Image (tube, rainbow, N blue to C red; front, side, top):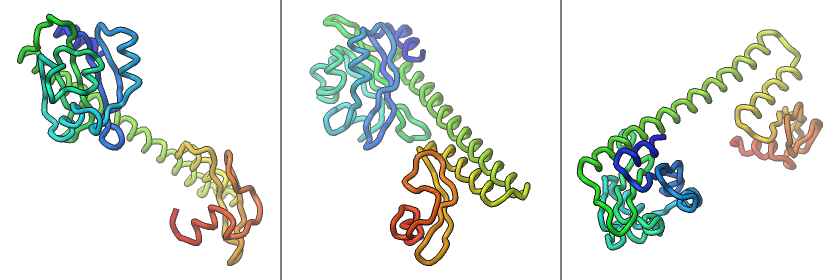
Length: 231
C-alpha cells in the first residue's frame, strides 16, 4: 500500500521496496504503482548485490539519498536494477532504523520526456522511507514478541508437568514436543546417559535419526554433542 500511495503522490512510474538480506544484498519485498506484470516479475525475481549493482554498492558504502534525472548515463546508478527497469529518473532512499540500514526504497519514472524529480518530491520519498522503516521495525518487534510468547508457553507447559508430578516419561515427552514446536524443526529426541558408552533414547517427536532404545555413545548425533559438551 505504501508503494502504491507514494507512486500516486508523486506521479511515479513505480516504487520498489527492498529489505537488507544476507551478505549486504537487497531482497525484493513489495512493489507498487502503475507497473506492468513483466516489471513486477523482474523486481521479485532478482535480489541486488553490491558486487554487481553499482547503486547497491553506493547505498551500502554511504547510506544517503541518491537521485538522478538522467539515470541511464549516471555512473552512480548504472549498471544497476534501475537500468533493467528502464528508469529515466530515479530516487534511491536508504531505509534506516536507528542509523542501521534495513532496506531500500526506489522510486522511478520512465520515458524519454519525463519530468525530473523535484526537491519536494524527494523529501516526500524520504518521508515514505521513514514510514517503511517504522513498519519493518514494528514487524520485527511483533515476531520477536510472538517468539517470546511461544517460549513462555513452552516453559509453562514443562513447569506445569513437573509441578503436577507426572511420570518422567511424560515430562520428557512434553519437553521433546515443545522443543520441536519452538524450533519449527522436523523432529527432536531426548536421551539419558545410561553408562560411559551408552545412551538410552527416551522419546522422539517427528522425524529423527535416533529411535527409542539403547544406542552407542559414539554412533549418534546426541552422543557426539555429549562428548563435545556443545551443540
